Image (cartoon, rainbow, N blue to C red; front, side, top):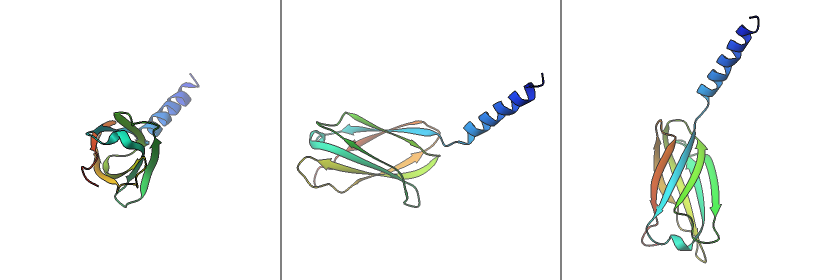
Length: 119
């Protein structure tokens, strides 16, 4: 019985700690359309409203990238911008693809991604 208050306090502390932490989101881009077979790298940058980079991750591929690319990042609810730099084999880097992203309560965000038709 003497330890019960300590256990309750510990459980309350753990619950408060978990409820105030920023949830991890799974951002998934479905690569649609043509032109992806020449892509050998994708550089993802997630920026906040102030323009600061919150997450940057680069993915490299020995052949065409998979149909979906996933990025895990801890983000609170809000509006963000993603810059996606596409690097193709034997070609200069394209201008970044810019995506606006609004995060609500969802943990899984699926977005289509197409390469521009012209350079």
